[in-house]
Length: 430
Image (cartoon, rainbow, N blue to C red; front, side, top):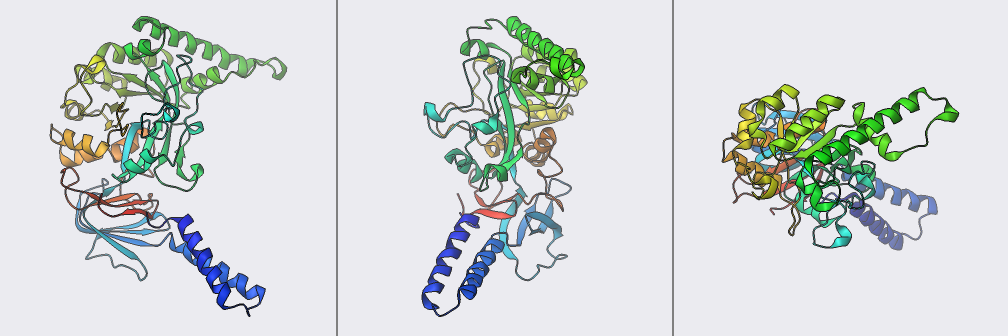
């Protein structure tokens, strides 16, 4: 991996140490000055300005650019345009690709809580001690150095919406992160993106209660009503009479007032309608997740104004996803619904799907190339609420860029360069 700040600093200290051996006669002040210069030079160089040249650049902010260029400075996109109209300033590192796209966004994943292998100790995406635990925080379990994060990054995924996964009535909170950084603080875009809920038979397989769909909805309604009462007591009571802090009700209250969106995994049409009824009753912000039978309810979803994070195109068609269709993405697009594609949760090693491949299948089943690419870039960013930072190549936005050696949706093509926040984190074909 290149342009790694920690590697640069280590190299700086090594070179400085060697300089010390050959210049013992220098004063302590001069030696300290040289060490500082070496460190600063390499630290600044890790944020080197970059010129990205592409035979075709899909900006996702307008028309594609043939023979285009993207200039990167200080981690942000400085300029985007034609190579014939933008000159490369002195000192810029140049990288080239046949096709250039924004960094890919996985709109719903459990990567980082789910590890790359089938080991119980690195599978934290679902806590089975209670069916309703919205207070669980994704960043308390997220492992930014998990090999699975590196795996998806090398395939062009620069942003993950990840966290507690489906399988509980309320499994916990999700987060939005970049797939590269030195510390957790570096990678987090949003520490609490949604609260993850699930409706359907998947819940009863993990918990003794609820046993039926109607019981599951009733349990959620009961908790939402408790949260409403809790919120009212907090507002109206005197300081010495306020109820004790309740993390579960506090989180649900934030969902009810719209501070945190509710993401409901609902595959069958019955579950989708239940989620829409709950949203209508309590007024929270809703994101539909999975939605395998959403093609049956496009009018209802459109009327509710709800976006969809669609299941992986190639999801196995059994159980609640028995009636999936490869053409659902095209149907949602045709009906004017905002949607994105996701990797979801894969039960087998390497424990995740890759949204690049899911978009390719959607492209082969009714979506145009740019519509499929939008589902894993700008449209995903819109659903997550970060289109001002990620999802397209536009001046001032985060410099998250992927370079391919051919059509991204052809299996013979490779991800050759990945840039995150203006740093080259991969520079070789995978």
